[in-house]
Image 1 (spheres, rainbow, N blue to C red):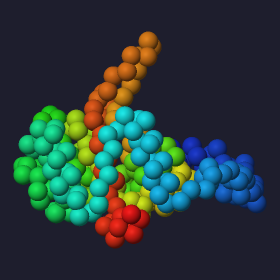
Image 2: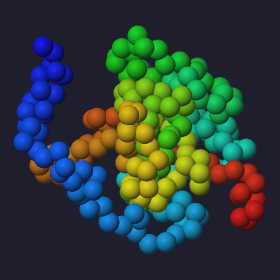
Image 3: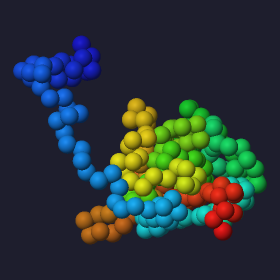
Image 4: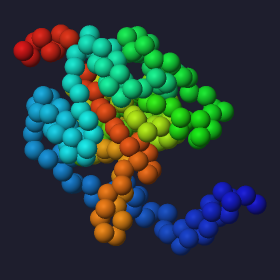
Length: 222
């Protein structure tokens, strides 16, 4: 008997005395909580995201889609990054001006090999304004979870306002729970009993988020 069969057997035995006409879970649990706090325009929601990202010690950049390649090149140059890990579905034009060695994500790479990478550049699934959280779901422009956990420097590109939602409940409505979701609120950090903060323990020491706005929208808003 496998572990899965053993666990499911225990669940069946625990539910054996539950009446078949018992209220379904979806109806038994009241879900009348607020979906978001207050009303905000798209611009205000993006501004709140930038504020909360910075509050979590992420470094926030803003640019238009036309300036993204130059912005990423400048970030990598300032970091001194020479070897950059690239997910398989990352838009090639993003790093066209960077002049770095692009390292593909390979299944056989060990944690030690990933640790020698200078930076990783990814897209995202969503960003949550109220919590300053970036959500990855393993999509083609994000790659596997470990490539955003082992390297010390993560640059994440967020398309605004299309990929920005106001709250966690709004995000959950759009995300696929069957995908490998990673929720990132700032760089990895922990504190000991004396509240001495240490960064880079469970993931990247430095998180940089680039909020990219479509050129036409930027010109319309100016």
